[in-house]
Image (cartoon, rainbow, N blue to C red; front, side, top):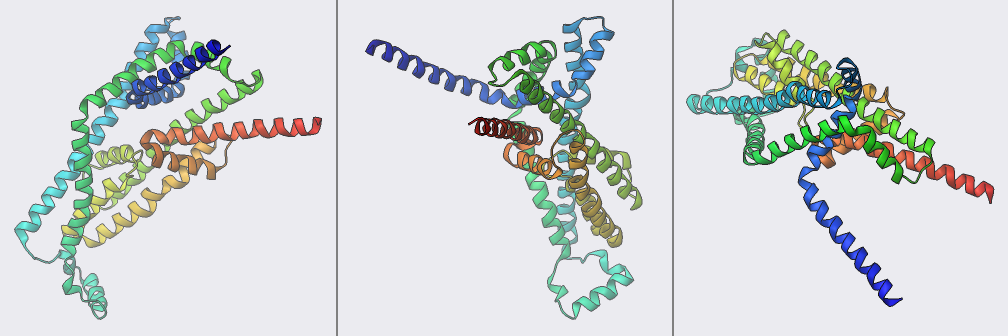
Length: 354
């Protein structure tokens, strides 16, 4: 009896140790695996149609679709983020050079007559001479540029990790396209639920993943159009480039302010204060806040969850897990609400039976 207990204890200890080592092995791979699951679920309808079009060549379809997703979504997004960071840091360096060259020359805000009168009125109550608005604006952009510089250096320093993450994502996504149904059936076997409940939880998780993915893309597209419209109104060039940058920035935790903010500061420092004010208000009130309304709306249409819970899932997930938390947050809340519903139903049923 003692030998059997000792053997079981040794088995449990070995199992726990193995699980811990497995966690250490998979920990650096988890971001790539998480993105692969999200993309595989989101593009599963495309995979099934493409498989029928290729007459059942499943592995060929899996590899082809994974490469297409990487070529048209993953790689362009990474390049856009790096280019955007480089552009903003270049803008910061240019403004820094301008201040060094111009010394204490005042901003060209005073060349606007109406603004001059407004400044005179404000000057009755505030000592504007003590304020160096150029340096204040430069300090704001400098904070952005410094953060982006640190982040970009981190990307370069962790280039191997980024390559590994992308490689893991591509391989995992390819396998999930081909082996997805078999893996889902294996997971279903270990769920302590009835067949109807298993089907329901898988359906809800699938719907949430697709709703978040397409909801995020639609929201970013609307923000890009609105942001490009503001750039066009103030007369800045490269409207399409600003729109594309806004699209990719819309899915980042820092938001679209990293696009329209430097543009507004540039207008301010180049002697166009009213255009700068308009673009800042347009970016903050229209571009920067519309996602708080549209994203829960688009996502909420595809899931059985209140808009408030969608809002909490999106922003709480991003704060907790980074960009991938945009999807993990709503998924975890969906699973939690499902388990609460199952527990409530079983407890009430057991209570009624008692």
